[in-house]
Length: 260
Image 1 (cartoon, rainbow, N blue to C red):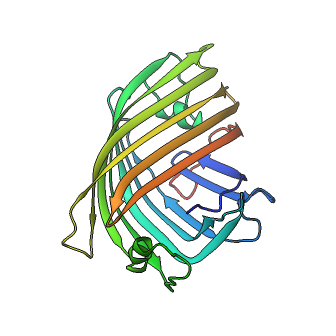
Image 2 (image 1 turned 135 degrees about the horizontal axis):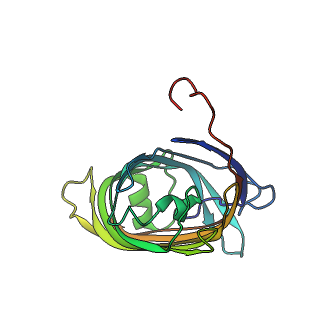
Image 3 (image 1 turned 45 degrees about the vertical axis):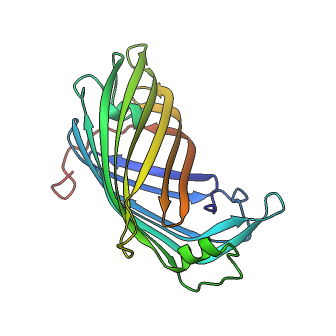
């Protein structure tokens, strides 16, 4: 099953600890042009340079099932995937390595540096099929799994390394990041089912110009997670490529509402 992915364009406005983002799909780039499906994502990030805390929530209302003909899809509208949890980050070398420079060019990295890091993620997820139909999912085991509206909790841990290659006193930067790890998954409704293992890996890279006023960078990411839910192997794959260009404004002379 696939999300109805597309190219998108948007605007991001950031000031100190507040960041607002709005984006919309580019017309003509969806996998299935005839189908409108909804994806909701919400997250916040808090912490220090060494420790970071990111609670998140996500929901897919509907997915696509690939058809027998290439680039043909069957909309699966009455199924909903919901998940919420939190990422806990720890960085070993926050004094020399800038995560802000690596991920969003929001800080200068004057000299090249790297850092080990760790991520721990507890998460709850659920599949809800509102109107199960055996004619739609013909495989019996898969039908039983989805029709049971399963929910599960998981805890994963990853260890990784990030490095910022800094050139021309920080004006140009290339930042690869890799991480891998594992964890466990437990289905919540069926107590008799065993705890299942999880393996996961991710890779990110970004690079571009990080000037005093202007910045522009290209970034890409890939992640995979594999486990087993009841009777079926479960795999989740995400890929993303983006191009960002921005301009930095100066600080305001007075605080906004006494907070910013």
